[in-house]
Length: 416
Image (cartoon, rainbow, N blue to C red; front, top):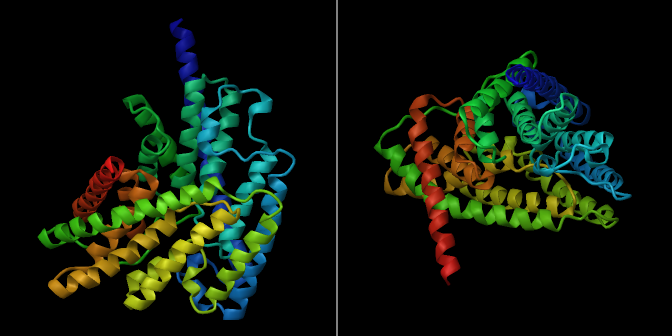
C-alpha cells in the first residue's frame, strides 16, 4: 500500500512539472502572438513601450479597432454555435467526470484563447489574462487525465495550470500562487502550497527565456511613512465601494452576454464606438496598459475623469456585446486613475503628500475588490511597478480598508 501511495505521489509530481512546463511554453507562445498582432496592425509592439498606441496614426487606429469588432463577432459566434460550450476554469474544476464527452473541446477552447489574444492585440479594451490562464488549465486537465489523477488532484492541477499561465505571461509567480487559494478556492495546506509554488515559479522561470521579468510600468517608488499610510487609508475607503459597484455591473454584463446571431450587430457596434473614441483618446485601446502608464506620467483631472468613465463603460459594453476577456489590467488602470483623482483633492489639504502612494493604493484597492483576492492584488501591483518591500504596508492598508468598507456598506444595504 505504501509503495502504491509513493507511486501515485510521483505521478502527481510529474503531472505538475509537465503542467508548469506547458504553461510556461504556452505563455511564451501567447506573448509572441500578441506582439506579432500588434506589429502587423500597428507597426510596433507593447514591448516598445506601454503607450505605443499614442504614436499610431488616428485613421489606422480607427480601422483596426473597427475591423477587430467584425472579426471578433464572427469568431465568437462560430465558436458558440451548434451547442458548443466554452467552459470557464471553475467550470472545468467543478466537473465530476473525466469522460471524453465531459472534457472541453480542444479546438474550440484553443481558438477561443487565440481570439482573445488577437482581439486585445488589435485594441480590445479588456484584459488579456484570461487566455494564458485558460491555456494552462486546458493543458492541466488533459495531463491529469493521462496520469489518472484523483478528482481532487485533477481540480488542484487545473488550478495550478491556470495560475502557472498567469505567472508565465506577467512574471508574477508569488501573486499567482496566492491566486490559486484566493480566487480558485483551493484548500490551503503545506502540501498544496509547496506544489502550487513549484508550478508557478517553474512556469515563470521557463517563460523568462523570452518574457522579461522587469517591471511593466515606470513609476517612482514610495516608502512607508505616516503620510503614505493616511493616503492609503483614505484612498482605500473611497475606491473600494466604487470597485465593488463596477464588479457587480461586469457580473451582470457577463450573465447577459450576447451569444446568438445578434452578436454580429452588437459587438461591431461597440467596437465602432471604441474606434471613434480612439481618434481622440488612443489610451482607450488595449487592455489598459497605455492608460495606466499615462496616469503614472501625470494627466490633467479632466482628461483622467473622461478616460476613467469611458474605459469603465467600454469594458462593460464589450463584455455585454459578446466579447471574452479579463478585467485585471483595466482594473489596475482604473484604480490608478481614481487614486490620482483622490490625490488631487488631498493635495489641496496637504501639499507634502506623495502622489505615487495614492495612485498605487487606488490600483491595489480596485484590483483586490474586482478579483476578490487581496494578497494576489498586492503581489501584482508590487511586481507590475517594481515597488520595494518598504511600499508593502500602505498597499495592505488600502486593501484592508477597502475590504472592510465594502463589508460595512453591504451589511448596511442588506438591513435596509
